[in-house]
Length: 366
Image (cartoon, rainbow, N blue to C red; front, top):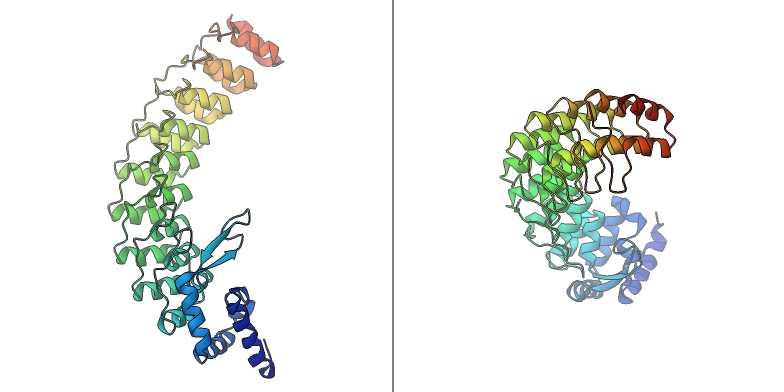
């Protein structure tokens, strides 16, 4: 902290910096973590007409601030003191800028982010509450189509989400890539937020531009509790993405045994293949998920269903050297004679890859 005899000169220096459009020393000052310093800074700014005029001008015109916060490549962004203060969570500075300087609560930076957007993204509850009290719009979105509700869901800021929903934030508004707030919650594994959004009539089957549903992304991540929640709310277990990958395929690829079991119990399509012809069983064999293979083999799945290169699940298990999976497939009478497009059989690839144990198992079946 500064000694009293140095404060006046120090604050005058901050004013010079503001005149030069440098706000770092004022609004990114490490001393702002001390309430006593904040009070002294506000008192100084309130009592200086030049400072208030300058801050009002900066709010109206913005200024260029180069920071990693905007772009990792060092690009610049036009921002305002209010946006910066909201972003950093300095609620009393935000109050001063709105009530004394009359800064516009919905002015945005060059990326289209408002003070409310930045505070929601960073989880600054008191700032969000103040901004909403001052009439900040919950509907403004940045250049990527992200609303305050979306970024709050993405950041797992439950209290802020409640505040935004009370102000009628739209749960159906998506980003430019068509990601909904529900999708963000499911992607992050935030069960409570997903449940809240569904109670607010979020569309359980609303997909992004890759045609990935909330159920699909929850399956990819192996969030079984969220998968169950979505299924209980009528999520479409057959809905595939643009690669024709089903939720079951995603769960098998992600390696979540519990999620795969849950999907199978809810009637997932075991015969569905993606654009490469890969089935759920194929990808489980490809990645060596033995327990998932066991689950799938307890269904009526086609054990010999090949991909577009005519590679069967058995073929791929032989390539990767998964002896336990090969044994499971052979026990279910997998066809050992199916060859790929190059005419290579499972026996051929096992020998070529040096998997002696598998080669011996296949020889017994040939």
